Length: 116
Image (cartoon, rainbow, N blue to C red):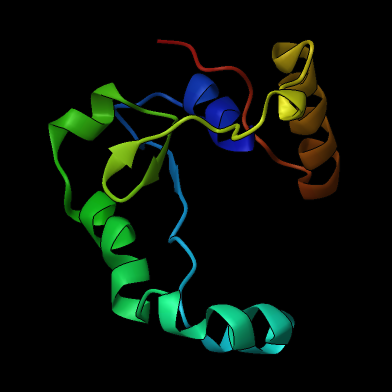
């Protein structure tokens, strides 16, 4: 949600915004925070390099990504942000505004709406 709000507010000629999911990768973070999950799923987890692939691709991609500013990615493909219907918000625009205001209060310097 915040990724989309950044993309909406910041001039894409200056910076573009993307979010991505690495997939479930066998990393120290998974081992430490989800030991049971790691124990059961260990052999099925991606390698750290596989998990980082989309992030590296996004960092090195060109103009096609500027046109898709604010997207969510998995395995080098744009994906929906919601896997199940009950995670959709009734009024996502309003919630994005609330999140933006909350972040702005805490950061003290979030830029205003973009002017092109």
